Length: 233
Length: 120
Image (cartoon, rainbow over all chains, first blue to last red):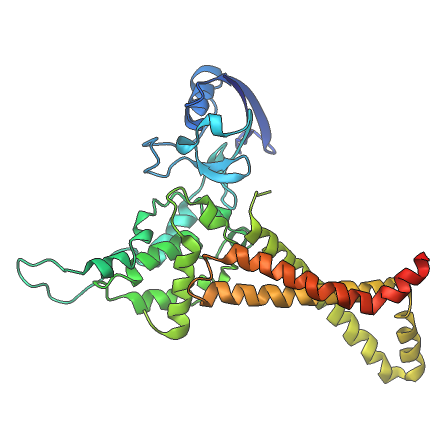
């Protein structure tokens, strides 16, 4: 089947403003949008730039705005999209080239919430830090995040205030705050209680719809808010 | 433009109604402050509000306040009711129903006779 791709192009070294590149490609219905982008890059226009790594929905490299919504190009089958597919870079980040954005501010915020297990208690020799299935299920959902930034860049609060920590970092904080083995929950909650923290969330729910891993992002954010208000993890 | 859902729509409406109410409050403070200059100025500006455009604007103001208040309750429930994030869309539809149930009789009471009188 033939499909048309309308891709927002921008090379800051050459272009004064973004422009739309229009391409027609022949694809199989079961091909993914990523395959169509490869078709353009490999056979029609080698200057097109986009990120991708695993190409199987695990690494989160190829998050982009597809027909107005954030998606992973490697998870979208062309048969489920329109015959003309509009592809744009993620919103709210500086465009480095075409569909590649500068994600450093995103990872900076991610590092701010201490995204690792903190526990200074001495370990018993030969014994792991155990937890019950119930304790584990408390943060099961938020372990699935792949840091693709689809949620954060779908959030109007982030577009209007780039300093907002964003849904992805709150999800990552949630993963450790509610881990029974972790001891730095209060510290992370303190960080998220700052003016650019969790209270910038306006319950828009774009994050939930955008997450390619199906994480219930608003639920995680609401749990963090309740933990802050009721002082209870 | 991002193709968001119900949440983005309600967020946008919440913002627009919030800014609208704020603008009204600024104008209201200014017109009330005219009393400091004397009753003549104050009465003249108050007489302006009898104009049909202002009568309809009052309905719009009530609609803005009503939506903003109802949506505020919805946002509160989403944040602090454990099942709030599950039912956020249903809460919005419930909010829309309550909005119209309240809005129709209030609008009729405010401008019904004025609008119907000009039509017939």
